[in-house]
Image 1 (cartoon, rainbow, N blue to C red):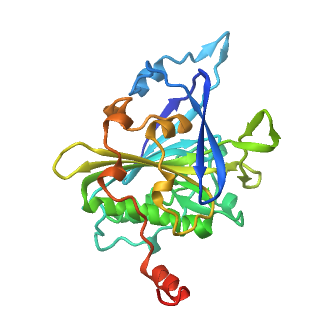
Image 2 (cartoon, rainbow, N blue to C red; image 1 turned 90 degrees about the vertical axis):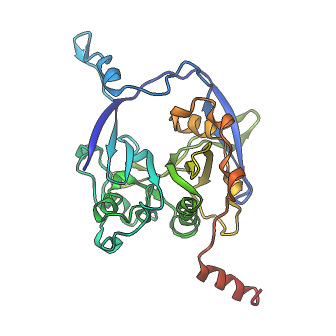
Image 3 (spheres, rainbow, N blue to C red; image 1 turned 135 degrees about the horizontal axis):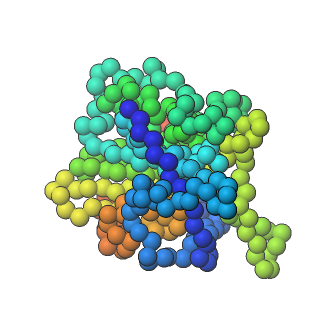
Length: 322
């Protein structure tokens, strides 16, 4: 079952701040341009009310309409960006019951699909990814929704996909992070995960003084129309089994090959900084100061990706069995 809501997107820049992320594993400095905090931004937006405030016409002509398609599937909710042909974010709810296989669900029955709920001129197409050099990377993983075949099939819509580097990222480190999220359900009653792409600026080495920053990303397709994100984020809210205070954590990873041994904590970033970079507010019911009030996830559990056994065995063989 799918529910679709159109949301008008608009706003004004209220000044920019600079924040540097230093990914030691890649030995490069990555800035995130972030907006200054605006305390009077409402935590929740009533979609019907906000749509009613939009003038349909101005000075005798229709006003331009910018839509973010919010699609509710059986196993996730996504907000699709028509301009970039990527999700803005995807929200999942994980718990032990939802991760159980119903006995009939299998990935082999699913296939990648263009999403007919998006107007054709704004759709990401299967041909856009063909021979692009990038994987069709799930934001909500198929392995998270084994409770029904329909839920798994829904994860294969391109509205749940972003172009991801395959070897060393989507097929390895990113997959280990997804498994980390699933393993959290062993410790916590409910785990909510928001995943999405980022397009972050980099410093141009040709202009050291003063510094100049540019947003630069590849675009795939023919004609080119699907943006390739520079980074991806995950924001995780974990609810304890005893009903205590939730834990909150955020991670930002470059869309690039990441060595398997890289500590996950290297990619930790304050949630409010991720919100500023993504232009979205996550888990607003916990307030604008949630990043300061809620304990960090890595303080209440061990933030560590675990390599599959066969990779561990290969590493041991390469190191002489050690």
